[in-house]
Amino acid sequence: MEKKFDLVSMGEAVVEVFRKEVDVGMDVPGDFIGPYPSGAPAITVDTMAKLGGSCAYIATVGQDDFGTCVKQRLKKDGVDVIGITKLKNKMTGIAFTNYFSNGDRKFIYNFTTAATAYLTPALIDKRVILASRWLHVSGNVLAFSKSARDAVIKAVKVAHKHDIPISLDPNIRLEIMDKRKLYHLLKPILDRATVLLPSKGELNLIFGESKSDHEIIRTLLSGNVKTVVSKEGEAGSTAYTKEETVHADAFEGIDEVDPTGCGDAFCAGFIYGMLNRWGMMQTLKFANAVGAITATKKGAMEGVERLDEVKQFLSKRDIKIH
Image (cartoon, rainbow, N blue to C red):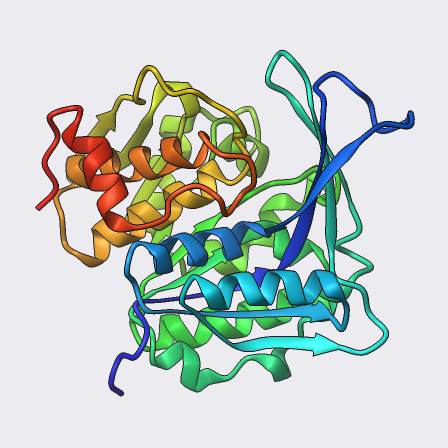
């Protein structure tokens, strides 16, 4: 089948509403700003589209203004939204977020009761998956409902059967995920994923604290997983394969405004590099730059606007992208 899309992603299409000030709990009255279009895999596919990739997204939203907000934003940025279904009598998912001066965040979600939980296998069009060069999924979607988990597994099985690369961002959110069941929850995807993109600490949450990251990565690379990419925030990122370990430092002097979506944007940058068959170091530096730019603007999808912006960011730091 002719490949129409560089990337297909699926999962939650939600809005995010932020506390206007830091260190203000959500148990007291106060000001919020938003709504901002959001959702981890939605941010990834939106960023990929702005980098110039041909993309499609599969998700469920409510027949409300928030659903329209997300769908219109993705469409505006070049994402094919034919796979986004509006559901009657269901509200679009909302994430309320507040920040603390030490860098921590706290969330309140309704994802397991909103339209996000009503993604079903019947809404997965195999033809869309087969028309893609890459499938990206987010682990938290597996916890929304059994039907959402089954939908993701269906898409992953189709991609795996037809040798389409699959990336998994565990995106662990203990607000909605049971720590004791993480491995069981993620196993059907881990068994088929080509690339695993965990944030710092997620490997231990999934596989248990008794094992070191090195042991876990070695086990993963002995299976279907070809690359494990550790997203390390201020420490940068590290990629592990059977052949090599490559580390790229984070960029200094970034005026961070909002870290929301940085890891999801990083995923888009990494997939972009992989699809272009770049070397691992160049891919990591590019992905780090995409994540860094995202942190400089308020709102998860407000970061990178175009490929040239990333190239200019890197050029100022004497890094050339070919």
